[in-house]
Image (cartoon, rainbow, N blue to C red; front, side, top):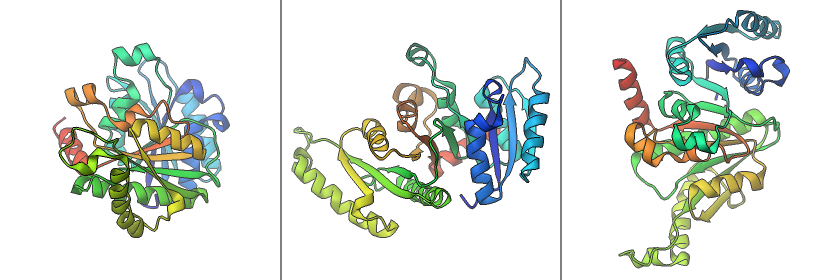
Amino acid sequence: MQSIRRILVAIEPSAETDKVESLAMRRACLIAHATGASLHLLICDKKSDHSELLTTLKHDLQAEDFNVTAEQDWHESVHQTIVKVQQAEGSDLVIKQHFPDSTLKRALLTPADWKLLRYCPCPVLMVKTDRPWKGGAILAAVDVGNPDGEHTALHYSIIKHGYSIADVAKGELHVITAHPSPMLSAADPVYQLSSTIEGKYREQCRAFQTEFSIDDAHLHIAEGPADVLIPFTAHHLQAAVTVIGTVGRTGISGALIGNTAEVVLDSLESDVLVLKSEESLAHLEEHLARA
């Protein structure tokens, strides 16, 4: 978090009638105060003029000694507008309040916030609740059992950001990791019994715990699908923030398979910070350079 120098805050006009009630703005001010980052307010709209609202928000924040700029812009869609402005401003973090779509709409169309998570080349904080961060639990979701280089680097980033948020919030970092259920058809007998799978997984976790200074009380190991266990654990801990990584699938693969970060976005009862792997970032930066 300390590396954040510029924060892009996506403003939803209907939610900004009172700055105090704006969840995205509240989180942005908390992080900016802790890191010294500047704020760039953005309203994505091509129809109505919101210059008066932006001026008011800007002046109010400047009166509180925040370094603030603001603009209204539009590039075909909300997620494309945010990404275009993020690139132009060199923002290190995007903050947006999440407004869930209906089940029917999600079945027919890819939700706009999912697209933002897929295509934004910097971390995205989706703000969902007014639960105070101060003193709260911060939950980091990792897949310890996946040892490839891309996931290992992503785990490091997730834990690093988790500790940084815990430091800002004066809270405690917890980690959730899930191992698969047994498969009777598995060629390796280790993966045919729950007890042997869990034992092997806990062995893998020991090195992880040592590397990141995570004790047993703050490591939660469970069996089953991550998209079920992450929201369950966040609810149990009453987590203020859940930090999760994504491989950033796009195109047909993303449409058919989806990403855990997207799937759990609506079911989590906490704010959600989504990070990307280095490989995903390189792919996105190449895509944006061609655009």
